[in-house]
Length: 446
Image (cartoon, rainbow, N blue to C red; front, side, top):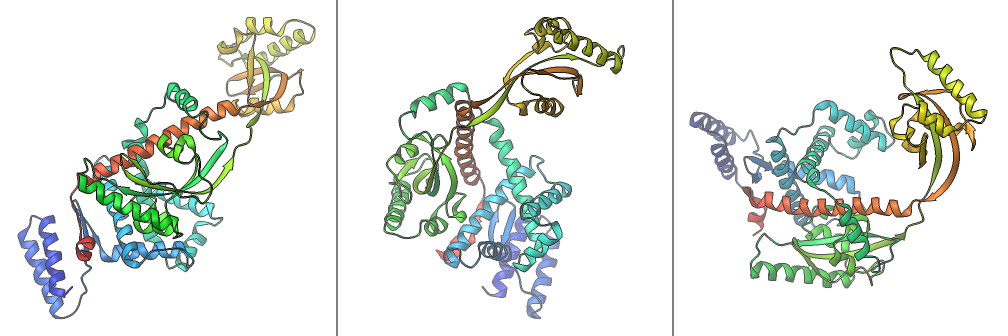
């Protein structure tokens, strides 16, 4: 693009973004003078996103970071394909951060600094060493830091726009467990990779035909031995495309029924048939599988008597009262009867102080420590927690198969994540469809 054409592009966007014609004229005169003297090089605008722009240098910088993070051995597509994928991600980022900004979502510098320290710690580095590690990879620290801010903003945007509205009922959990009881090995998890060719809202027959033709071609290439990772990076329109479509480990409950059924007869390394959902056409590849073990947890059976501190009784009086109760129990009086008469824990006193079988982790740390110090059928001395003063009896310990409850918890979380993913995909597509976007990279390649 010539310098004059670049100036025209810049002026065109300045006119759209300002209402001051005198300022435009001054900028135009200065720009033309600079070009005449060959003093500047104008950064080309390659995308307009609502009232924001993405420049060529911004795109190049993001691609450089991606290449540095991927390493030399990574399977990356050609420069043109990679640029198109990265630019599409940047467009979606701008749309989502703009949505958040209009609703007051922002990340302050203190929160960002803490996130950077946490990221450094996960890499077993302090912040200064982490900064130097980025420099050695030719990654600008300030640019990287701002990208982390963007990701944090988008996470909050998703939480407000989508995740906070997701509700999972017990009936949904029961229905899913029952409906899939005999489909697949309940102990099996899959590590999956995914390719999506999207359909627009209310697609026409030609839209469907074009998308189907593309996914059929990718299916043939995948089953013929081409790298699924490379195909996903180059062609998938899902947000995980640049990760090679890797979805991580998934239990069947995380997948819509049509996808779960397709996995029934597949082995690690297999590629699914073409599948369709409301968002478009899909391919899946099973990278690996693994099974679950029984989830055994330690549980304890305890009962206690609680006396709370107040302005009338000092702590020494409370300790004396509890020691008297303890001695009466040791001498044969009923723990249950004394708890009903004296305990100030409304939840357990009605049951004679009985707390039932539970994991020690559900209790206050001081209570948990006291449990750990006792033998079965041993009665504690008076001790203090944030709730007051207690005496405690450890009645039993057991290893409990918590697989069913754990399974329900997993199903709940899987259903929630599945709904989040489905709603996020629809929300992002709607956000894009309703926004003004000018992708000049596509225009130049067309």
